[in-house]
Amino acid sequence: MKVARGMTMIELMITIAIVALLMTMAAPMFTKMFTSSSGSQLVNQFAQDMAWVRNTAATSDQTVTMTLSTSTCTWTAAASGTAANSVSAHSMTTAQLANFPTLTCSLAWSGTAPTGNVLSFNTQGQVTTSSGANATSLPTLTVQTAQGQTWTVTVLASGSALVNSGTAQ
Image (cartoon, rainbow, N blue to C red; front, side):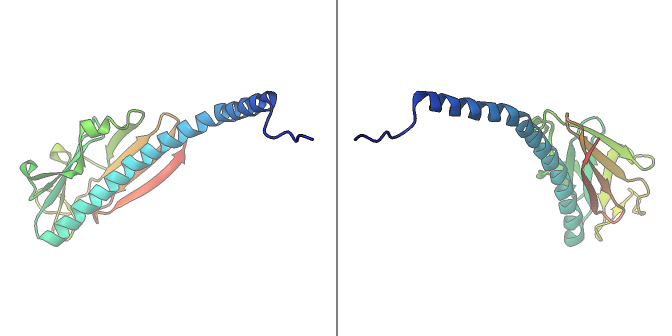
């Protein structure tokens, strides 16, 4: 007597149809997950670059700056306080920002923005004005995905970055 092994063609077609249906239902969830991941990645990059600037200023006995763009979500870190000494590893360029096409960014200041939107960090790692006084106007970066997920990063006078992640709107 022969014992049948394997699947019939009908069983195989039903299995493939069920898998296709499940994948169709899961696709929007994967899209949302990837978009959310890119927003989180951009926010974390900003916070890490801010920490690098602060730590470099505190450990190298020099002024380190971060220039923020209000129109795009880009920033430039520079040692010795000059653009000629910019550090590309801790900056976000327009070309790098192209990797995040579904994100929108905005930059708001708690008061009057400093000239050129430049944050200066003194040798203690604190945000200061160009005259060396403690800064009173500090930035908040807001990043939003196409699905409405929002992150905010607030720079504190101590030079630290406070991240509020993943609030849904």
